[in-house]
Length: 98
Image (cartoon, rainbow, N blue to C red; front, side, top):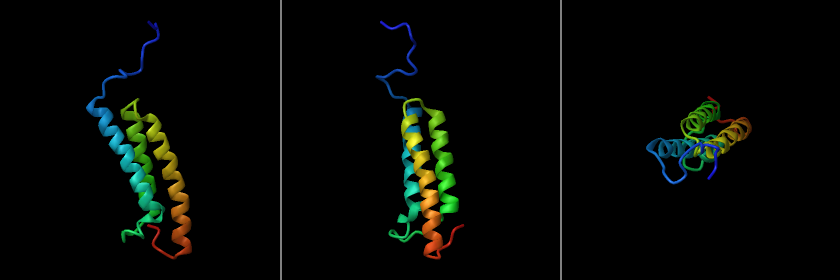
């Protein structure tokens, strides 16, 4: 038995954990659209709008749940990468940025 308190109950997932996981996954999806995959599914990718929104959603998901903080951290890094690559592709292909 450990005297160190556990940050969360490892056997039980709350509704907050589920919502935070879905928000982090949604942030990754927004990042995919911002990176330029929106052109494939014929949605206008607006990297200057979608990537910061994806990062904010990932930050909120990280704050909501300890269980999905790692997934949310990955989503934040992916949003930063999506912003850089999406802005570069938008400038090269002369698509809308905002």
